[in-house]
Image (cartoon, rainbow, N blue to C red; front, side, top):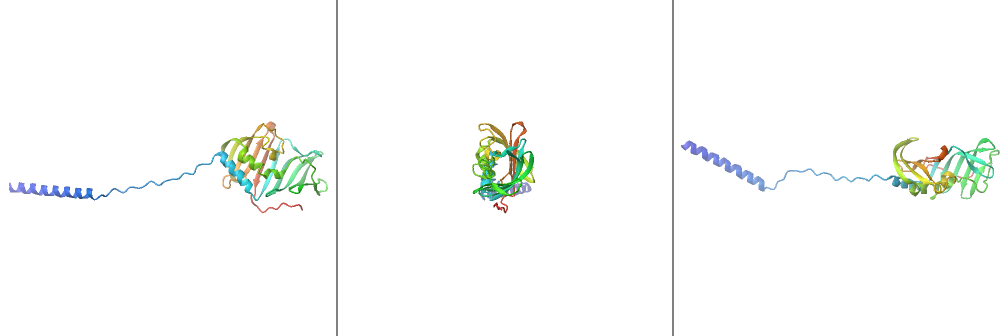
Length: 245
């Protein structure tokens, strides 16, 4: 009997000790450690219109560039006085308004290359026979400098392209470029297309914007009948000086 009572007494003491320990732990205020979820700030992906606007601003900020302009399909008139037409121009731009280009032309059935300067003091082209620079006749059909002016390609990129849609990212002459497709009024494209497109008519326009620098790498305008225009921009901010020789 005494052994049984002793056992019961020991059990009661053990139970009391456990209860006291649990009560002490509960009252200590300790909480399990929790890992906080870091706050992630997402950078919104720019819309196609925003990408084009950035490219337009970047173009206005360029100190210089080189370009290649290709006329696809039928040549267009460069000099109405002589009937000279052109199909390609490769040249240099120096901000804010100086352009020089080597231009492939057709004159009297012959394909020739002439040099043209578009400068604030006037426009000059080389005589196809003597290679001497002479002032261009009034009404020269194409103005290379106007491509780079605020109301030229920068305006087309910033506000002139309607319904822009992002196509994807493509390689343009070794440059990763964002491809955006839309359409623009012929009047807005006059600087690039020598004023040959109809005002009030929308033409398909594709733009490739350098994905790193957000400068335009290529612009293409399509016309009916397989005609079109393509211009590439490269060597942005290179050391370029455009002066009459």
